[in-house]
Image 1: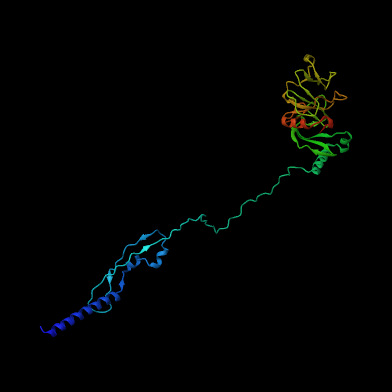
Image 2: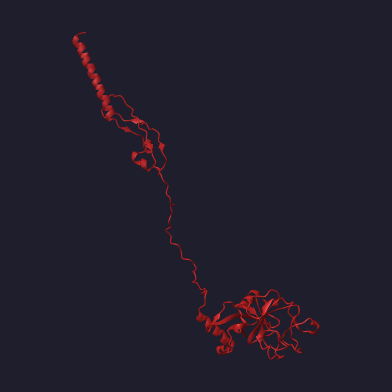
Length: 331
């Protein structure tokens, strides 16, 4: 082989390798990988990574199944270009919200079917002017005049407002020329025949009118009171015999046999506490009846007395004072 032939072979070899290098370069730079439709639907674009609301997930690597040949028509080597791993990241807040999320309803609530009534309670304290008017109103209804009360030097007055066999009791005390309610009003009962004119043969009627309040009486423990008192013993009787010289009076005696119709107060529970109503006790008229008391009880009485609950009776006794010339009006 001549030297010329050797040189030509070397030159051709160099050219061949140069061309091969150029072709490989073009394949790498001009080749565009095309994914199938299914692969494209499964792939995740980098711009969509931030919107995926799940925890960090590693997606599988997708390798192109089809390689489009280079734009230049020549024989070349196909170089496979693997895709990079795509990692989906989710940003988890470092602090949880402290307030719960509230869903506000857009529907306006309907109006209630009822209206809240306004307060109708009376004041806890009654003004003096209203108290005085209440006293004058009750006194006027009873048929008595204020002048009649003042001329008698009465400073305490129980007013018994009756209806049927029931009654409302009110205590008023005069202070600085004004009649004030002592705020111990209560309900009570009178005789089973109501109120009216009383006589010796009809003792179930409570007498109408104004009467002086007499002594306080009790069976066991002495109550708190400013009235004169006496204790009922096994010898205490109230005489209701029209033939007796002690008619409508209290006596102490051991000779029960001589008192066939006397009221024996020791064995009757209603006399636990009470007071004497001074009805027909002075200038005694045997035709007007006897023994009117205010005592303990919660039913209409059979003897024309005035019955109130024991606790109310004790309240009245604690306020009444003999020095205030107390009276009672029944109407």
